Length: 395
Ligand code: ADE
Image (tube, rainbow, N blue to C red; front, side):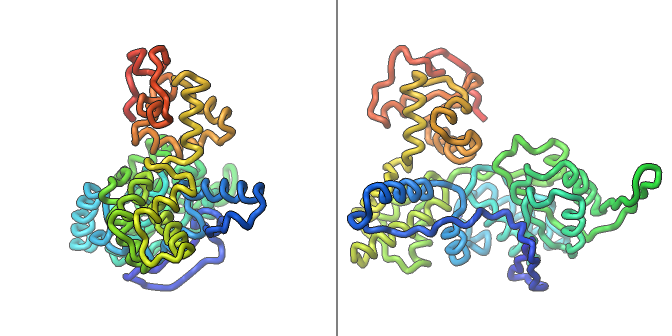
């Protein structure tokens, strides 16, 4: 587990066991001179990089630059305005009563700022933050060791909280509800339970799979907050801020071009800024113009809507193999050779939000916009849900 001191630092401690739940290190992004590589190697590298460019999963390069780019306060944080207003009021109220903030659950697609907001909350509360993740809290002693370190007012951040083991979850219930922990010793008739008090702390949970959290756990959070995709205007502000912090001169047109291709996701927007910056350096440009930004993004096959090769392949499969759907996610995943969880968590949320796919009770359907985007005419006889008058599941 990692303790990250914030502005309200009390101690500087770091455990050797890293349960931060952060993604494994991946290859840093680098622009290659295409002419100098053998074709097969070039294709492989391009494919690997393309997959990383638009993935909302965190890479090693993201982690490195995140530290400089991460907003520290709610005021500095761009977007999620409804949620920010509510947090501003609740943090103000908790601070004025000198109490810990009520527990918070953030859910939504990856890359939208759940971890960043947890850090911002800790910072605003003047509290320390302990960061860990569901999969690293498997055994009772993991939880006990963790809560044992808590001090009054601390924030405990559990990423991927939907992956907590049942034992860990049950141990957490009294900890978050009544600030006590039940320790058991012995076996069978000799089992003894001892209840220990805990300081009042704030649990912040984050998940991309709200549906996989038990009602019992969800009900114990005072705030259950969904992060939304960012608008193009919000992403433009984030891109401009990042370019400034990285000292990359950039025209407003280039800012807007990058924002429009960032899939509503700040993590991707920031990654595209770094990519375009490297491309600009390589070209010897002093300022990133729209032409440079578009050429850089085109070279990674990121299209004007921010779709990459996997997105387009998913739409092609729906349209060409399954006449536009409805078709189940497992079937699409098998045809695409992808993991269905990755499709559901990483690719599909944006395709749904951008209006390319609709989710119906009978499976996924390509929308007329998907046909048009791929340069095809929506077929009169396609089995898309719209044609059959199926009720869409709007979740
Ligand atoms: N960097 C990443 N996300 C951000 C946000 N929401 N506001 C400001 N900078 C960011």
